[in-house]
Amino acid sequence: MRQASHTEEHAGHHYSIPVQELKVIFPHGLPPRFQLQAKTFNEACIMVRKPGLELLSYLKHTNFSHPAVRYVIYGEKGTGKTLTLCHAVHHCAKQNWLILHIPDAHRWVKNCRELLPSSYNKERFDQPLEASTWLKNFAVTNERFLKEIKTQQKYTWSQRESTEEGSSLMSVVEQGLNRVRNSSDVVGVVLKELKQQSSRGSFKLLVAVDGVNSLWGRTTLKKEDRSAVRNSRLPFWNGAGEGSVSVYSLPFPQLLVTTAKWNLPIQVSVEELTLTHNLRKMMTNDWTGGAIVTTLSWTGSVFQPHGAYLPSELLGKEGFETLDPFVPIQAHNYTDLEFESCYQYYLERRWLQHEKASTNEGRLELRFLSGGNPGEFERISAFI
Image 1 (tube, rainbow, N blue to C red):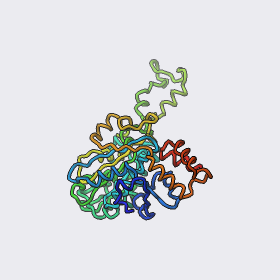
Image 2: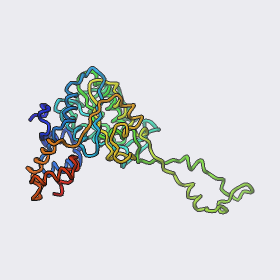
Image 3: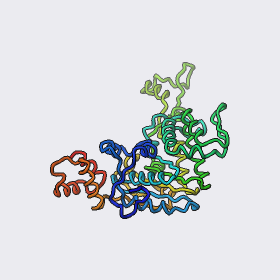
Image 4: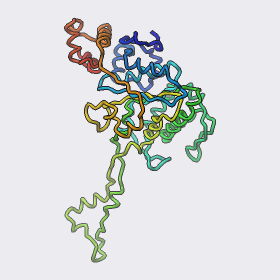
């Protein structure tokens, strides 16, 4: 079955992605548990499901002269939102689209390995390691396009280094890889150039973001707040006369002295991160020549109510208003056909080892225990 030929009659079928295509289209890897399963089975098979077919139908009929349409895939935990996005990414890559894929936007707002003040804008913070990693994978997927697309202006990185107008976009990416300190700004330049040039028709641009709600959420990143220390200084005793306060006459002198040396940490906002600031610009549909496909995810998000999955719940007021209007695509639990297909796939791969797993009673019990949820069914099957 050819990937581009997927129609309603293929619902519930599995199709395999060749290993070489995986390395190019998904160099960052697929969802962790799916990647582990693919390694175990020695093949990466994605099920053709109704949400994916609905999305592919929209993409096939895209009018590239109109502003980019935004698609939001949502659903409860484990219903296959990320794999639906991957299905669309693979489809577009096979149709020669330029792929701008953010596999997990939540990673940009938490557990950052290095946070540095931006050299371009003092109000923002760069994430050089996250930016350089993304640039490396982006270059693997889009090498041909990056060599062909030329910059529209000159970019100065330092007193000694610059990229001249008319240079290949690959040279800009290489700047971010060779000078990691500049990688966050390089990502911004790449996104800006692609957004401006997509309307020319020389390439079709897919912006695919997994966990887009993180762009309007909160972060776990901290920065130092020196203002709290400066604003709380006291006139320490210096032995110079009356009116001075002796630190030793206060109730907790050591605490006061120590506090004066502290740089109190406060939370970094999403708006202060260079990467998310630039990615937010790609979410506006003020450009043509492509499409924007996103997912909403409670898993991995920061400070979201447990079990939230609706766009209004996860995006918040600002995020919802930014993306509106958008086309919602809901990912559901397995239909009877989809569950049976997955069940048979596991049996054929001998993933279900229990002696009763292949019986009708075993099948019904697995359906009951998982509730037809794809993620739960995969987890339960791993122990049987």
